[in-house]
Image (tube, rainbow, N blue to C red; front, top):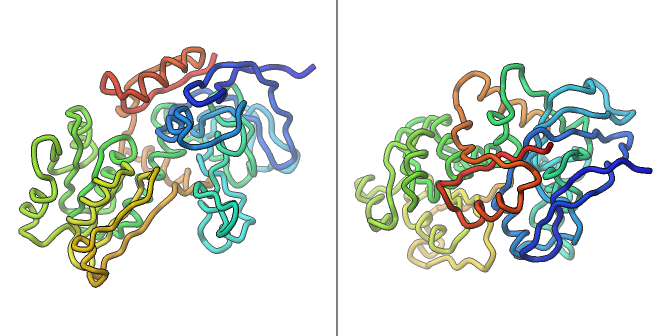
Length: 359
């Protein structure tokens, strides 16, 4: 009889519950990882609310830190008992998208059946990480050893939000001395702020309406914080830049209002780097878009995955360039994950990220 484990499963819109599931068997190219820490993402809240459809009975979650329990027969260069992470996006590196240099879109394809979440499998198309164990597909390409001396919480952001936020800064093409405006300072926006600083931005303007997030934005590298409850943000940013506009803006929320503001503040020839997950059609205002004549770029990103991406992110943490540990504001046991979802989805008590620990 199969051994059982606890897992947080999607029951129906509004209900994610702990249930027992068999510990999965390990195929040749897979690895079974015992999860030591995971977390809840804004995308998981979309699933909880029924705004993003997944199969009933699916284990949710896509941000694993853990220990290799069992390796598939074809997976080499790793050892059972080794501490690892795997990216939220687990590319195969065999698909057309991967070989075309866009590994995050592994599995997404144009036309009928297109999945806008590309290569996102954990907690989307396969069982995810809010469980005692997770089966990592294409393990050779995706398992990344955690450097000695780094805690679970220090690397907990790497699988998704750090990779995503940094991708937004990279896609913005930030050069040394650039002025950048970052709209929304939730976990991904904060990582985009940190990424902009690492890319060499000369002036970083962070926008939000929550005091704790604006304070954290300063810790992550923002030079100026703007509270949209108190000022006209577009007007203020144009004033700060002497009417020039910013070199690039990063949108990290996924609302029409923030997208539009991010478009209105970029200079002629500037870049809007969009990270938000949108749940309805966007409208592009004629004036802000300069009627299509502004040499603007609008780029979108999904978090890059794979072991080399994870290695690079952990290298930045290991060298002390950045510390994302303070973004973990709350701790819950897996058994209490329903309470953690309630806290996180209602954004109570200054929550940024929740560490979930099985066992």
